Amino acid sequence: MKRFFDDAFHRPRALLLIAAAAATAIASGAMFLSMHEAEPIVAGPGVTSQKMLSDYVPAMAGTPADTPVFILEGAEPGGTALVLGGTHPQEISGLMGAVLMVENATPQRGRIIVLPQANRSGFTHTDPLEGFPHTYKIETAGGTRWFRVGMRLTNPVHQWPDPDLHLHPQSGERMVGWESRNLNRNFPGDPDGRYTTRLNAAIVALARAEGVDIVLDMHEAYPEYPIINMLVAHERAFEIATLTMIGLQTRGIAMDLMASPPALRGLSHREFGDHTEAFAILSETANPAMGRFRGRTDEALVVEGKDVNYVRAAALDRLFVPFDENGHPLRERTARQLATIEEMLIAYNEANPDKQVEVSGIPAYQAVIDEGIGRFLLPVPAQ
Image 1: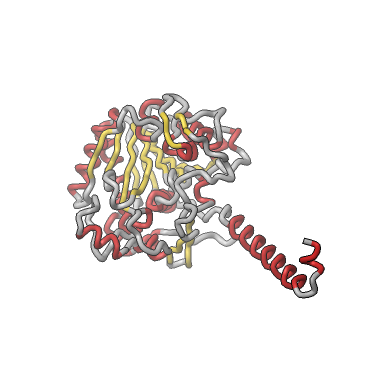
Image 2 (image 1 turned 30 degrees about the vertical axis):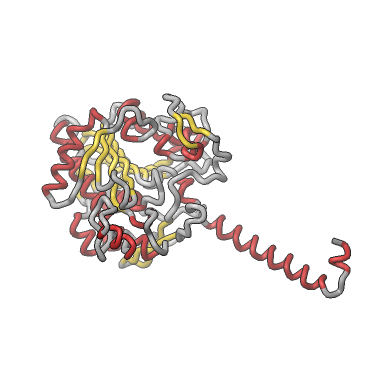
C-alpha cells in the first residue's frame, strides 16, 4: 500500500478515487436521510383533534414508530370507526384513502379515527433491488403535493437482524424470518417485543382505549394475486362485510368477499376481531406497480397504473382482475377505498342503530375518478 501511494503516478489517481468514494457516500447518506422526512398531511375541517400514537402508549415517544392519529368527531355521540392506511406503505391507495378522509370527511354522529401511516418506518425505505421511486407527486390547485412510495416491511435500520424463522408471539405460527418486520403479520403485538410487535401492540391499545367499534385496514395487491378487489372479514364482521360488498356491487364497483381464516394469524382482520370488541375488515385493490409482471417501475406506473405487460398477461388469462390499456390508476384505486368506507359505514349503521357513525364530505367515487385525487387535497400551510 505504501508503494502505491508513494508512486508519483498512482498517488493522484488514488486520492481522486478516495474523494469520489467520499462524495458518493455523502450524497447517498443525504438521500437516505431525506427519506425520513414525513410527507405533509393536512388536517381538514372534520378533524377535531390530532394526537400521536405515543399519547396512548408513552413508550412509543421518540421512536420511529410514533405516528400521527387524526380524530374526527361529530356533534352527536355514536360509534367509533378506525381507518388504517400505510400498514403496508407501498400499497399506496391505502395511504391516499386515509389522507383524503383526514382532509375532507366531517362526521355528524360518532367518530372516525384515522392512522394514515400505520407503520411509519415502512415509508422511510423502498424494496431493495426493485427500482422503486422514492416519491410520487399529485398536482393540486394549490400546488404539487408529494408522497412516499415506501415498502411493506419495517425499515431494517429500525429492526435488525431478521430471524431465520419468525414465530407469531401469541400462536407460535411459523413464518419466514422477514415477516418479523411485517405489521400485518404481528397483531395483536407484544409491548415488550421488537419494534414491529411493539407497534402492533400500541395500535391495538389505541383501539381499546378509544372503544373502537369497527376497523378497516386498507391494502393493495398485485393483479396476479387471487385476493384482490376483495374484502376479508372476521366472522363477527361477516354480515357487515357482506352488506358492504352488496352495496359496492350495486354501484357497479366489483368487489368479492372472503372469510378471515382462523388459523392464519397476525393479520388485522383476524386479531382485531379476536382481541378487541371491534368488527374487523380488510380491503384490497389492484396495484400493478407491485407485481412481478410489471415493466419499468417509475412514478408514472405508480400513479397511472398502466403497463403493457399486464395487458398481455390479461390476454393470457393470468390475472385476477380485468386489465386493459387504461390500467388501474391510483385515482381509481383510491376511489374504491373511499367507496368501501362509505358502504361499510352504511352497513355498520344498519346493524348498530344505537351506535351510528354518520359522516359527510367523503369524496365521491366517480368524482375522484373523473377529477383526480388532487381535486380533494388541501394546500399545505406555509411553514
